[in-house]
Image (cartoon, rainbow, N blue to C red; front, side, top):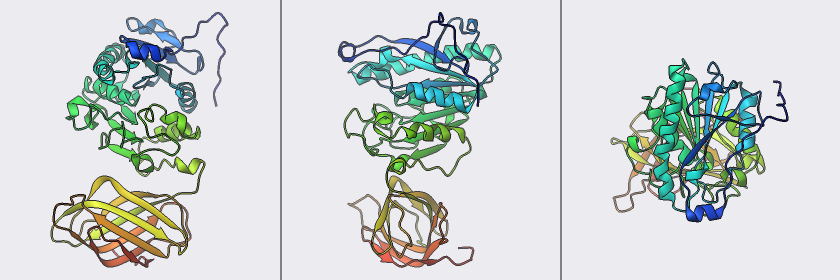
Length: 395
């Protein structure tokens, strides 16, 4: 818990730049404003000067600093999630939260003009962080949270300090103009000591491949429940999903060393999901790459997961492990169906020879890990089997 101090009535509070569609149609020139929030002024932003940031008495260099950077704004309106996100961050820790308001520059129907501005925003932030460094601030205590294009702005800024910034979190990182680009032209793991990415719209305007030390794919990383499949889906991601999502993300941000994390957006309002680890050992002579579809059945209902956001490597006698999120929880599991594909339809079909497959539920279940031994998967052909409790062995 913490004390929220109420500022005097005479204290002027700054707000995020509010524009509309007419500004987007005519285009806006870049202008960057830095809005400072602390536990003393949780709901009353103070303008932080680029030239003389330390004249603001609320800016405490001994505290960690978190930069919150929005992305493309074709409608011009402030992000609906901004206020609550700031409040939740300050509930978790005493820090400087700096909202990077570049709405003038991000509001433009011409997406490519906005992309051009990302480097300029990064240069602006680089100048501020350099001043902080010269005053003795620990770059390792800086956390940059970038949404959409803000993710790459964070990366460009971090690259200017050769990866010495503590942490970058990319939320729904932008894809167009960045997909397929070399690391110097986008966010990449060398931009901070720890880089993580949460992918939520990779089949539309989001970035599909890995960007960080750890990449998470919420609900598989494609369209989220309740979100329209249009150009605006990336813009209203926080709006079209359950409000508890922000709490999930802030809890996610708390766990710097997390390796097993599932963002169950569907689970906030819908059926219970099943999270589990799938471990496979093959005995093919040659290494194969491919994708898996896994179905679980209790005899009446089915749960399914498609492990297709990146190609899996299957090397002889080397265990391949992947975290899977099934679309529902079925118990007890009486049958498992597997389908293997390489995604390369013009090449000869492959066969995947499984020495063992093991499914381990990560929630508290009465049954332990389930296994099947010595199984042959022909490409694009579904195989169904009855699992058995795993044997106690090294395999």
